[in-house]
Image (cartoon, rainbow, N blue to C red):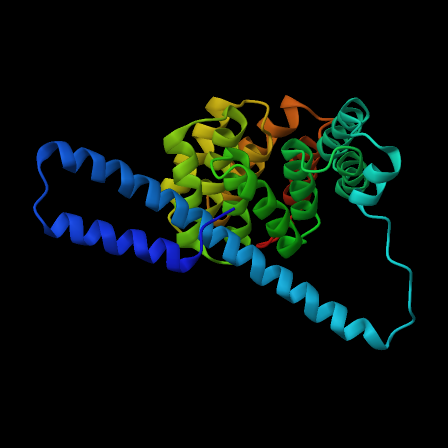
Length: 287
């Protein structure tokens, strides 16, 4: 679990005093490693605090519902496991694959159902919980997704894909500095190919929102170089070009995305925008 604020402060104070004492070269290297570890733990604590804040909001909503009709609570994952007497990892993996398939096909609600079933069969599975957060993000349930990722990061503070998607949530909440910090960390460490790929895409979106078009285009193109099948990059690159007044470049980007895979959700969205702009329309400013 992430450390408390008092624990972090105590470590900070100890390091501050040690640095003020003019440490030897050997001692400096040890302090360097401790500072790196403190930074990592502080990062995890910030994520945990944001997730806890989101969970408090859930309490508010539950309080508001107290005057409504009483309903029996749903069966919990713990009850499911206790009833079966075992954890069904094999069955859970089937539902994880089903959840990923539905996400890929643009059905986040269906993915959420499958992934919750996976977690009932195998509670605490990081892969299922990360994908559940992804499904929640796709439905704009950002606070719920943040809670899902906090649970993952509590078990694995260095989980790259969880950090990537927390960065995306910060983007959607307009917390651009925090988003850049999360996503840049993922790219710098480069621990997971998929996480690094999406971190480039999301950083492009962050810089587009901040109207730093050159940086945004650079990250979108890096995402395409790393993952040519990540067609959302073509979609986002086209929107960047369109709102920068580069109509021909926007059309070329969407045409590339549509041609790459006309059956994928993002390939279809590229094709739809092509038809829309060719008929005199324009893409929405927000997506």
